[in-house]
Image 1: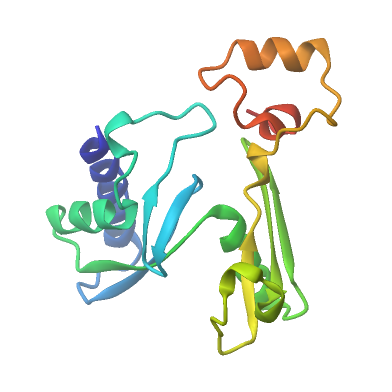
Image 2 (image 1 turned 60 degrees about the horizontal axis):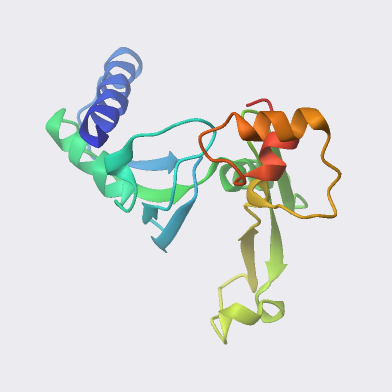
Length: 178
């Protein structure tokens, strides 16, 4: 269940904190969640669907940051999710932290995705929304890209036929480890 999943994450984090830090002070947590979410704010987002073979049915549609916050509270941890990002955006943030010329990130692992920094005025969907930096991260979610222009081998077709999400996450299935 969703509660079991986030309780596991929270208890693992509690063990880590007790071993490494031990302090019981308020902590802010950046939560990297490697699945498609509908981002509601910098610190909240609802799971759209599971990918990469994962499936915890009662989690779809829930705010995953809130689920983790509740599990952290149940574990007695004084921690709150203050940022929710996917793995690609987290990779970009880390790269940019060390080198401000870093403007794109690509993940090719169990799944695949890419993101990049774009000028806010070049993003039609922003409709006048400005940021302090003048830029915004665009998360491609390209693992779900599917096109008749992509050549599919018999292996690709067979692999897709054997998955739980047939005709979904096509690019991810063609190039990633999962």
